[in-house]
Image 1 (cartoon, helix red, strand yellow):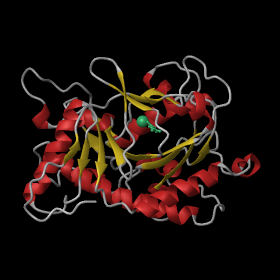
Image 2 (image 1 turned 180 degrees about the vertical axis):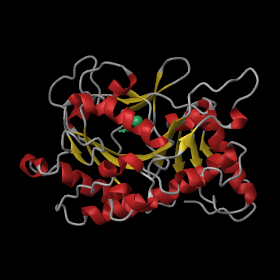
Image 3 (image 1 turned 180 degrees about the horizontal axis):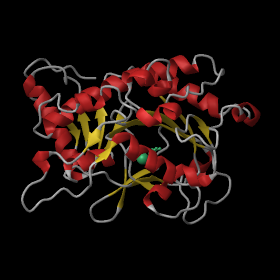
Length: 343
Ligand SMILES: O=C(O)CCC(=O)C(=O)O
Ligand SMILES: [Fe+2]
């Protein structure tokens, strides 16, 4: 991580291109530095909706521990994993999800089942959080406790600390997004102060038979919330759809995260910021023998937050493209269309 003394205006874009890498260190520094970072984020969100970040401040040894405990969880015997499976009627997906299905179903795209298992938790599943989160009719379901494994040791503590640190990062990024959009930097804060973000591990097991022609580790989809903050290991395979209709590899940034815009940010900005389709290719050759792990923090506004086109992103000749929605209703509808039909 580089240190930026107050007042420096060094370009925060450290790698250019369709998926640039932005150094967000110094984001709590001078107004000039904050504006530079916000401008770099704004540029990336208009172009691809994807960017890497370094200088994010999340403890690198914690990220390594998250990787390790997550690999250990998915490597436990199936009999032990069975006790952690998401119940068929649970739309929150808390626990291990290993049913056949493809996330592309949420886009009405038919593909063969994703070569992927998931483990998901949400702060709403921790004691006391749901009580203040304005869940309304959804309270009974979304206040259900997270499903925590007993092994490996330290799993729950590691995941909760990672959730806390990435949640803080997401709050900072939302302030920078507001600045980048020319809004007051606290504009989004009341919409996200008791957010309903899922933290999901994607476990992509080794592949020992040839994948079907329309089979992916994760099929083409856009994400559904505001921002996704993604850790990926060094296996590669993540691709993003560019404006010319080509799939572009998203490079692994050592020690960094990939950030991408989700659908609700596209609703807010009337598609000025793009919620871009992406996918994870099924591996071939040597790579097929290796599992892949990614950790996706799907930043999702407060359950009852109303999301509608920002006044600054619409006007005469430029009407709002999307009907207003609420964060929780949108999430639920997407989760059910992606995962609900696979029972
Ligand atoms: O595993 C990855 O690199 C990306 C996963 C993804 O797109 C998702 O979980 O929404
Ligand atoms: Fe995604």
